[in-house]
Amino acid sequence: MKSVKHNIMPILAVCIVLFQVITLKAAPAAANKPEVLSMDIPYGQLTLIHAQQIALEASPVVEEMLARIEEAQAIARQKQADWWPTMSVHAGQDWQNWSTRPDWKPEKRMDESSNHFNAGIQVNWLLFDGFSRRASILAAKARVLSAQELSNEARRLLAESVAGTYYQAQLAAEAMQIARQNALFNRNLEHDAEKRFLAGDIPEAEYLNFSVKSLQAENHFLKARQELSAVCIMLAKLLALPGSELPKDMYPEVGKPIQTLAQLPELADELNYALQHRPDLQALAAQSEALTQDKHNIRGSYYPKITAHSSYDYDKYNNYGSIDQDEHGSTVGLRLSWDIFSGGKRSARIQAADAGLLQLQKQKQQKILEIKAALQEALVKAESSRAVYQRECYTLMLVQKIRDHVERSYRAGATTLTRLNEAQSDLVSVSAAVAISRINYLQQLESLRAASGRILEEV
Image (cartoon, rainbow, N blue to C red):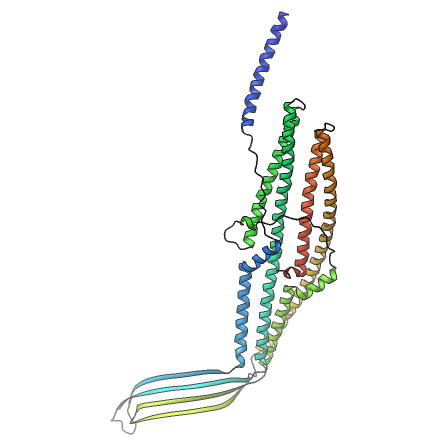
């Protein structure tokens, strides 16, 4: 009996030492346990339409395009002024000192000084130039239209970019919402498991499982919050806000479930609308018209120019020799000028205009192919994302019921912790899938509206 006691004592000593080591190592871990994370989600009041309107009103890109429109309009007014006559006035005063030695009396030198004042008015009016003037005015007006359509194209692209960024922000907020719900679920189970662990009903590993799950959900929340902050910086840039931070009240609003899924439009209808309203297509048509009028302008140079002119002049001479005198005169007349040879310059300019028109024609054909492909792709993706969203919503309803049943069974001791973890993981996964599919569906609808040009209807 004594020998057995001597054999047990070293074993007990080793166990005590190991317990102290484990306790010392576990103590810092317990001391470093993070505080409970505040999981507020910074939802704001910003809607997508409002965000797009702010961007289109404040963006430097849009303001630049508006300045180009004003420039084109000013050029058009310059061309319009060619219909009117030009009027100019002139006046001058000369003081002259001169010396003369007459041939008939070479021994005599005459030194004189005189003053000469001259004033007049002249009017020129181009009556005919082979219709070049009319063509140049029409070309300038077409370029105004082109500048306006290019401005609308910049607005279309900006509205599409704002929509994509806005939905990315909503998706990050949805991820925060899912992570928060997961963390709250595991915290509640953690508190319940702590009581059961202290009562000796469950092992410590089961209790710690919920602590680990709660911390993992908080980490997912922090990552989603970081993503939301980064996306909101991009959104503030698109909205042209001062600074790089988006005010809290301008964060995207809460994403709402889609109650009714509208029927998607037909490809033929969207393509027909795009061909009539897409700003980039309209800009190409305006550029083609401007180049056509430039060509007519060049052809007008083959014709003569007829100009009417009129002038009135007044001259006053003082100390002009031995006399002073006043003179005045007026003229009215027509002038014809005709460039009959230019070394092939005019024909080369016409060839250059024809080549430019051919380029614009091919650009338009390529643009139509791109628009049709973009519409087809957007419709396919929208239809697919619509079907996925419907199924994910139904799946979420089923998974929610399953998780609730498993939770009640676990609390009643009728099922295992592993099964509850599986059910909760399925719920988190499907909730994320619903959010992603909803945002993806809305993004595809915006892509479809952008491809057809309808995105500018509301903004």
